[in-house]
Image 1 (cartoon, rainbow, N blue to C red):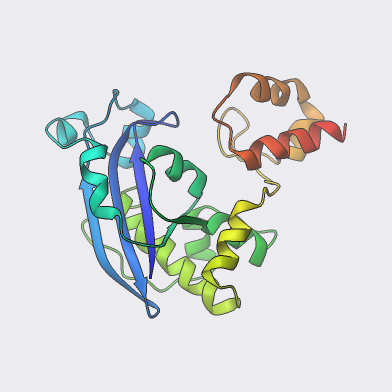
Image 2 (image 1 turned 180 degrees about the vertical axis):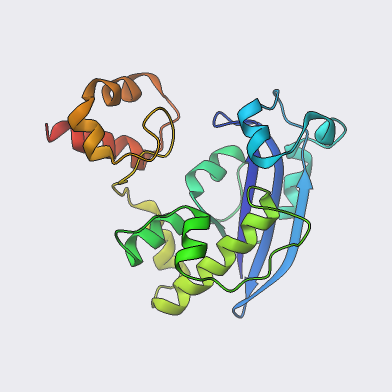
Length: 220
């Protein structure tokens, strides 16, 4: 059994406002779970505009530490950009698998956001009718369908996928900030000082992004 998990947050710095999961068993998506969560900080306006979860919706909800035990119980946790969700959640008793890294390995040279892969791969999945993209349970269904396609087109075992997840990988496109959507190789050419500033000042950079910035700066 593989458990696909997703979080919505107050912003890139954290503060969980929603957690959800679905399980994959015998190639089927089963056992949906979701909880709104009272965050430990205000929800940023930017985040609220994306997931549409308001302060009023979570004001009386339990803390993440009280909710998360019911999501335990799987040997593997799967997330799209797993390093982010792993950082957002209390320690989970299982190994992590990242569908972004798997997709990069299996289908090089395309766009890797959840919805971009959903559209380009024409994933066949029935999402919750009352939800939308950037709600945790909705995105769990998309990620689960993506993982099923990955398993169909590769011979990777769960342990293989854990190994691939653990390897640093170059990222092609900047996913946030003033250069969002631009190729990192081009940013290194045009504004290397910005990349050096990121390395020095943003402690929350993922290992993949940190390695990528150093790679392109060293090539200058």
